[in-house]
Length: 303
Length: 259
Image 1 (cartoon, rainbow over the protein chains, first blue to last red):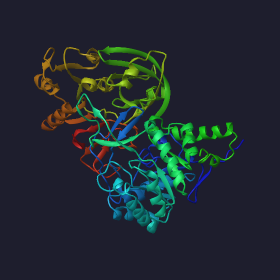
Image 2 (cartoon, rainbow over the protein chains, first blue to last red):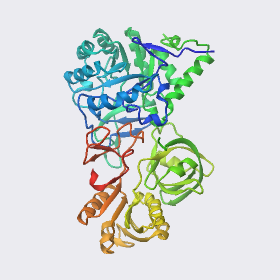
Image 3 (tube, helix red, strand yellow):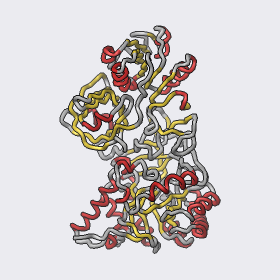
Image 4 (cartoon, one colour):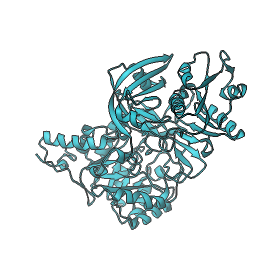
């Protein structure tokens, strides 16, 4: 039985519903030793700002039970080098879509990057208004519905590509944020970013990451993410890219049944660099076994 | 094309080196052929609650037997799992990773401190094999001189101990000074205070120094930017004076980095 794995996210057709979570995959170059990037539905890049950012002091990560905490601090080369080096590299992979994750410290920063990307050959933009690890910008935009709507509008005014707003789980009511992004004109939503967490090294009597707090990711957060994807799917009509602790095909299917049109794999890349391809294969097998002719049939099938 | 591989490989032998320190030999032709002194591998745990690979330095490379020897200290649940493995078990590994030591000089001073000692063994072997005079300086806490005798076929070996029970009381620099060790290149791996001391010593004496760093890592291949160190020059990845220890290191010339 052949299964249709193609999905359409805000007018962009992906060959399958799997992308990678921003920050876990660089711009793909390092993983291309292990993964044929052409086989992934889309590559979502590490966040890129208007200028290079050095990121946070080390240690930047700590492992936790079934997860990890990171506070990289959005180290990135800035849009100039990114445009010159990373986009041409990714464009070589004709079958995969390019989603550029955009970060900033102010509305102007975001606007500058989005304007620069308007003339670039990339398929979608993901706006990171939910990074818990930078003091200014990032999450400051993502925890107030008015701010979410306002920045979404600014992005939409300037963007030539469909705009995905990436939502933070560190809010009381994520559906409210999702509605605000939709009201601002978002073409799609992605969720969830990491949950703010903390780990203390009891032997050193010190914080495990230098930033004190960091973003918790991995299978430990998956049930929270599935719940939030479900809540957002009930609240909005735009496509959803679901993520948070996906380790295997079954996890990805679960997100789709909760209402995600596509999924992102993040922390699992660290555990298994081949995981994206294994998830895609596993999703196809699940459909074959269960008589599902089109993967899109699964989206939101659990009400 | 990269020589890195990721695969499940057999464990052919395990051994307790000393309290809390273990040896594991894994067999794989690709790994053994590609590996160089000073590189490391990522070992993955079977326990799904431990997601991140453990970066472990390569202690010995046997191209004939197609094995790598990995020597590590048990510091948490992951390394504890490895320490319970037996010959015949299998383990998922990615490697070889990073850049090893540049085998150079005519009179090399090899310095290892604590669990930084294991990677210096292959380095000693490789340098000895190409005719470099090898002088090994090992820093220990006490008289538990693990691996020391294994260095002896490849050169002179002196030790320092923190408690003064064997060799020079103090650190590796104290031992170098007490024994008037001289050379034209230093290669070192060990704790950060030791590496800082070596960088200063090398500068004072105008000796070229290669030092191997460690940091908490996630991906192990240069993508996640967790394990950076401050570098003198702009790095080619981000252009911000941050070198990636896993990919650009773990071995750096001392003057390249700020520690």
